[in-house]
Image (tube, rainbow, N blue to C red; front, side):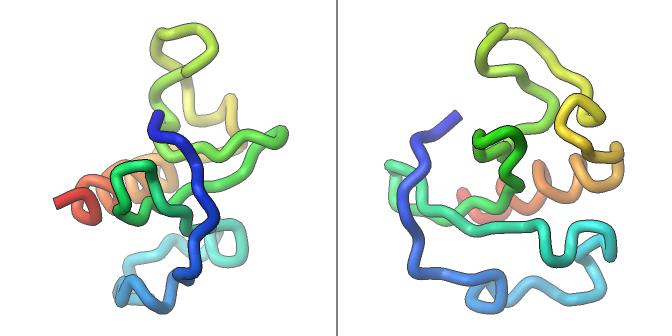
Amino acid sequence: MPMKMKSPLTLDDLNLPAASIPVSLRGRLEVEMTDNSYPQVGITHDGIFITEPYFDVGMADSAVPSDYGLTAEEADFIVETNRRLAC
């Protein structure tokens, strides 16, 4: 997982179609800049910024999105959005 850096960006700055953001993530999503200087969206869970909800950094293994309080739909949105932002 890329290092989290303070971002001056907001979700509005990313021009994401509002309809594409799951309603359940509104108010939970945050934007941070990676050490590679591109934005990523994610949620903070137990003090950790989660941008790859299918990967458990501490265990270096796969994870289940529900481990982070996410549904599969929410996790897929985060992963796909971050893939687009990295391009």
